[in-house]
Image (cartoon, rainbow, N blue to C red; front, side):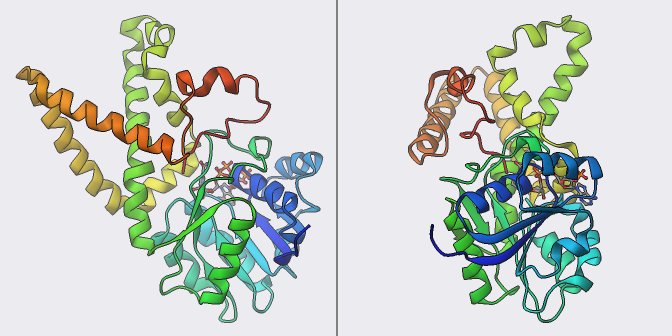
Length: 318
Ligand code: NAP
């Protein structure tokens, strides 16, 4: 087993990402000890029963004391309160990092609360599923996935390299960018697609009365692929939209314009415009498969995944 990168890693929030990190860090021997904490006693008991960390502490203070790395795995709207709670108990020289899907607001929330002898390395693994809670976690979640770090103007190079080494150890590739650029990129690749999915599924649910269950019955025609995204954790996604307002609204404006152009093409029977767009979009999917970020199994690998025990490891949310 290679050398440990950290002595004691404290994971705050034992949901999908927190539990997957605990499993992955232990699987790859990236830390001597992994401790975890969740605010809900029942979640702590379940985490203990799953054996995902060496210790599951019953308060945040006990979890972070003595840790040389603290990973915040809570919704982005909860980061400020969690920092208030843990800041007085952080060890000298500790590195704090996070996994939040928005970066600019998280930096704003963490930095004023961070002790002066600590470093904060903002992070976001581009890996996930629509499932939540400790039972959803699995060690392979981050393998062959990207993790984005946004250290610009926030932390020093040594801390960034240490956190990058952790993600690389558990199978991810690391990319570095500014928090603002991260938020713009994710608004396009993740936040807007989720918003569209929530909207389509919401509209279909409203029409359910009219269609008399046919929406569910014939969902394989395309609708069900949106329902996977729209099943994602409501707290997490509420917080993403409230904390990445500007970038999402900018992308939404652009999306609405393009949708209006499609509407016009249909109205005026402009088959050429439709065909040209659909040909371009097909190429984009091929590119994603070639980059190893999706399966080319028929039916999105659904048949294959039915035989797997864990959640679909090929599916990526962020
Ligand atoms: P999850 O499975 O729903 O877990 C969320 C965790 O945060 C739970 O431990 C929950 O505790 C805790 N939490 C919720 N509200 C809290 C509060 N107000 N104070 C303290 N703890 C609170 O969600 P997740 O998918 O692991 O998401 C965690 C973070 O990862 C989020 O910041 C999200 O943006 C980011 N992320 C998610 C994905 C994804 O696909 N899911 C991908 C990349 C990054 P309780 O059990 O007590 O409710």
